[in-house]
Image (cartoon, rainbow, N blue to C red; front, side, top):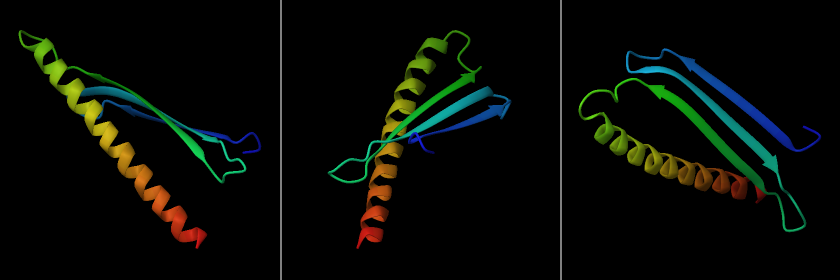
Length: 92
């Protein structure tokens, strides 16, 4: 786009009996400059899950939140490495 910003939205409605819905938003912002091309990637996700009720709901929620956050960090790091490698290949 002319302003250097692209937005992608995804939704998931009742994907399983555990997940009632999910909304994902990815924003790509072109921050290229004299040093070279650069893109800022912002990813947001909101998922509603209904398995955290009951006596141990708080414990389950804490475990899942921690694993989801570390999994997202690993996924984003791998994506960055892969995209930078592809860019270097094309630049040669």
